[in-house]
Image (tube, rainbow, N blue to C red; front, side, top):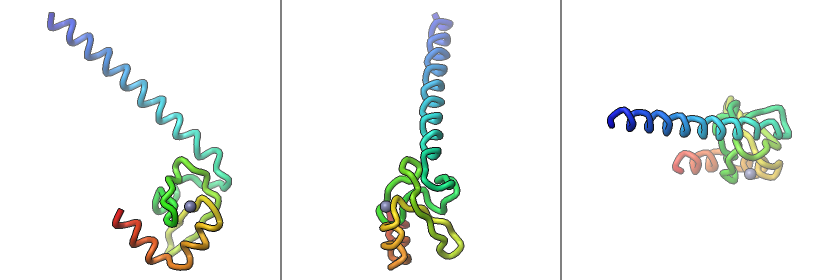
Length: 96
Ligand SMILES: [Zn+2]
């Protein structure tokens, strides 16, 4: 009887493992659609520091380097808004 449970748990583990792989493959394909040749992995933070959008899911339309760190934005408007007061935007980001 113990053997049956062992077999069941192995099957379950394999099934969960496959689901994980599928999800990872789906997220890896997303950055390929980005307008710029930049992926979220290259950014200092994985979100748009202005609006908080997840840049791993959204297309990176604009970027800026602030204090030697690369930040990505969902639009040129977000970049503009961020550059008006970058310290405040980054402080807000750190408290989230
Ligand atoms: Zn944005």
